[in-house]
Image (cartoon, rainbow, N blue to C red; front, side, top):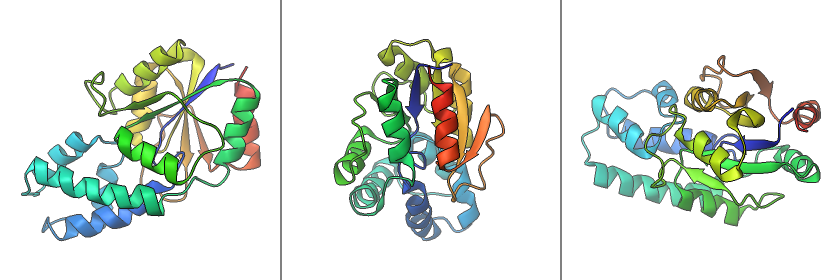
Amino acid sequence: MYTGVVFDFDGVLYDSEKHWYVIENEYLLDRIATWRPEDYKHLIGRSLPEAYSYLRQHGLLLSEEQYVADYHKMAVRLYSELAKPLKGIHDLLHGVAAKKRKVAIASSSKRTWINTALKANKLSIDIPIIVSAADAEINHGKPAPDVYLRAAYLLQENPSQLIAIEDSKNGVLSAKAAGLYCIGLRNGFNDSQDLTAADRIMCGYSQDNVAEIMRLLK
């Protein structure tokens, strides 16, 4: 039995990953001669510096400063205009709140982007604890355990008492490395992600899946 839930952000709370797939592929196809849309799977779950490092190794010639500036412009539009909460997430959040369980966000995305999405399309409950891989306290992004260990520390809970919900291979590995029970979420646009390291794989937030998560909480 668990005392709280730590949510990834993109693809777990919001449908932003499907929009990133379109926007980022359009951007990279113009800038890397060998880039293919299916290569995008290697970027999911990485922090921005880690994504840039990967892209530099695969032909991106832009400076990191220019890449970050371009990415920020894409992110502002995506999170303010396109990203919406996933179907069923409001039911899950209501259920967690009703049980008075703890919640947090542990994401590779920048805190400003997360706040932009939360402001544009509010969730059912406020989530006061947000950990971003870009935070000063975080030395390594996913798949390292840093963001989940930080979330557990801020929640004042042992990581083994928390549930993580993740939609990427890197995210699952991060949560498991930190010692959390991990649910790998199939969200309709992450079929290329290997979630087999998760303790349980669920397809969306159906009523049955929400009920199962509720049973895991004390």
